[in-house]
Image (cartoon, rainbow, N blue to C red; front, side, top):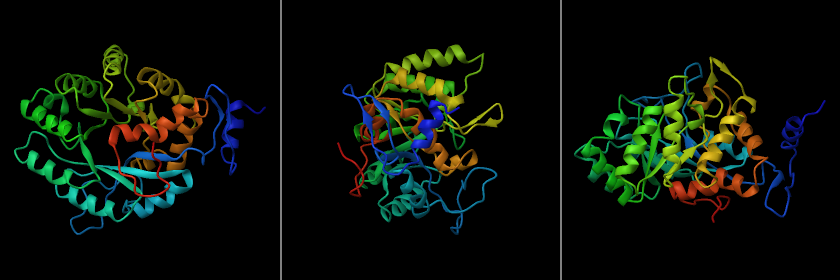
Length: 323
């Protein structure tokens, strides 16, 4: 018996497949080549450098440089035409390294760097890196022994985020937890003009003890129009098991899309960290299957249009779309 899911999945592999639409804008079918993709979450690093790299990929995956030419070969056949690099190093000097790497390959349309907003030198360094058009913001969360849940109440940290907002740059979070989401509520209460991107939200599995707090904070974030969410890390371990089909993830994706709406959801592959659970073609395939049943405008917003609103990235190649 051929199920609807099997039918749709098979058809997406047919080259040149056309859209079948309706007058109300709802897609009945969508091919890989129809909608260009801006990947808002990849990591770049090179452990072969003399100084090495503080992060060099997920456990169990062969260590090799993660650089734009390698990514480009994997991404272009999947319809990905541009990517935003998200920091993978706490070393402040790696802001310059990654900007130099990004400049050499036009598939990179933006860089999210690493600066600590509470440090005395932060204002000067932010102004310096902001002069580079590819520098689109910073990442901060529960990573590199940092704790955004405590920093959310630190006046110096908040002042640094105000500078970030004044520069029209974005705060990317690191690794979702309920207390991190609660910290983002407090931060956006204090700095309402700040754009925030919450990463990997589908991977957050609330427990029985945290479910109510999770539901409450999601409702709070729903009310903050400058908070975007990455429907990334969709494929993840659940009770130690990794599934690469849509089934186990469909309900949560549906709820997040319904909660945050079509204007605040973003695609991110998390490459090459995603290799720890699935290759990038599977990562793209799962969300593509989900959005095949969404209106065309919603799929376009998820795969690229909302990334412009969130990151204001820089178009560098003809294939990279513009509004």
